[in-house]
Length: 151
Image 1 (cartoon, rainbow, N blue to C red):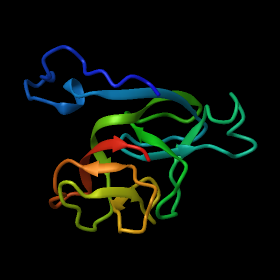
Image 2 (cartoon, one colour):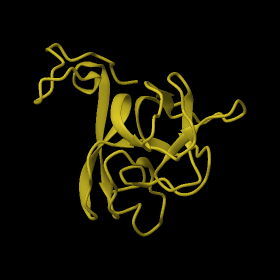
Image 3 (cartoon, rainbow, N blue to C red):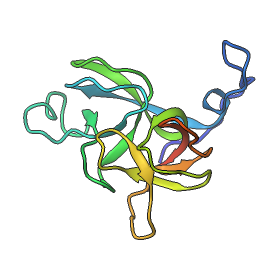
C-alpha cells in the first residue's frame, strides 16, 4: 500500500484560497486513456481487449459507464484528459470538482458510481463499492468535493 504523506507546505492555491486538494494527503497515479475524460469524471480500469491492453491491462482507464456501484473504480480524473494520452487520476485523498447526479448528497455521505456515465451519487446501505465520501453538501450544482478512499 502506498504511503499517505501530507504535503509539507502551505495549502494556499494561486488565487490565495485554502485548498485541501493542495495541502491534504493524496495519491495521484498516471493512466493511459484511449478515450477522452473530463476533470472530475469517475474512472474505471479499461478492460477492453483492444484499448485496455495497449500498455498492459491495468495501465488504462476509461470514464465509468452507467452501472451503479461499479467495483472496478481506479479513481477520479484530476484533469481533462485527451484521448490517446496519459493523465492523472486521484486514487486517494481530496479531489475537488467531482461530477455528480442531481440527487441530494450531504457532507459525510458515502458515494458510488451512478447510472450517469462518469458521475457519482450517494450510496445506499447495501452498496459495497464506495469511492469515498462527500466533504460538503451538494448545493445547486452537480459538482462536489470528495475524499477518495476506494474500498
